[in-house]
Image (cartoon, rainbow, N blue to C red):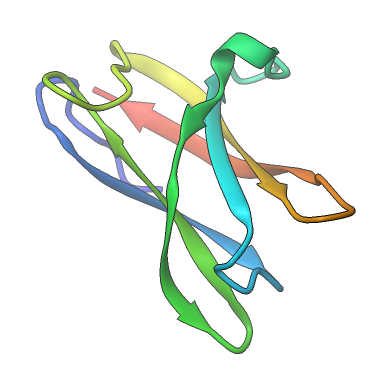
Length: 96
């Protein structure tokens, strides 16, 4: 992913193959090697839904988003459907 300024408030998009856009979705941020705990999850929404999947959308930054100080984070996406609840690594997010 492209670097994000720690001063910026903007949407971050994480592609999820096979998502219909009707499932529940949350996003977590950990250090590069960490795994999310229950307190790490933030509500997200779906964007850019296609037949192949959708993008988890979350607002990050000061003044209303998930605040990420400078550093590199691993994004995680948790999709909740009636039966399954996969937790998917979403790539590294550099914050400068």
